[in-house]
Figure: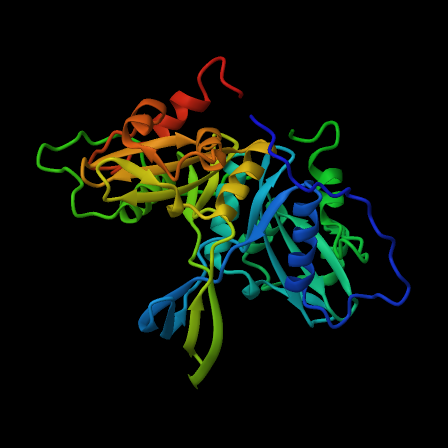
Length: 195
Length: 195
């Protein structure tokens, strides 16, 4: 294809500042900023999907500014984030919990688990990013593991220790806030992985 | 991965009925129904993204039903549809026009063209689906061609004859309404294509 001029930034990582611990920033905010960074430096094209809304009533006070006056949140049928990385379709959900001991599985909708199952069947990379705000730790957890846990009838949450053992701790920095693509490289693009 | 039981339908096409011409159905409606069909028969996992909305005010008359009372449409920063097909990331925009003679390029936002450029650079399949409602004809037009046309300073629309020549006519049927993945097979998965 034709390469149109675009301002390509270098993907240099800025080291973690001692006074930056990420506290107070939401996981969504951190991921959006990280995705913008990855987008601008041409490492990946990953976006958060808009929140699904059922629009009921719209006013048109002016032609140029339609005003929605009645709308409701809908249950999401897919995950929140998707895009392309190193030629592969990438798809994930992100959740944070205040619990010190476990991640409650009710945080994930059954539709989202079903969607991740489909992503894997169709050859995409799927995972869930889980943050334990109490520890200020964020883990990338492979979709396969999450799906198994979700279908295990014996428990309604995943112990923190199990996430720590089965997940991959995401390094936090200044830019990008969450270097989660490094974890993706490690988990899905190493020699011998499914690639 | 573990294969969980799922109701897999066969992907048999139902032949075009003489009395079904698709007229009166919006392109979006046709695509949503086609995507649901492709999803259920496990051929692809492609969804329309929700419309981006800026939420300003939310009332909570009851805990279970938050009511949005002030919100505005935002300009989309990406295309409307994306997903995974045959292991590849797929990404497209869909537009219809009533014009008999040409497709007006103002129908596509510059952000969407920029997004399609990124999709191609990162190894995804990108295109635009254009319907001429007057002729009841729907074309799949490769992103590369659309990007070139968009950047050509000489014109503000693409003549119908050029779309006819450079696009790929999508067969319309009963289920799926639009067999656009057949066009994708033909254009992107044939021997000698970029795959």
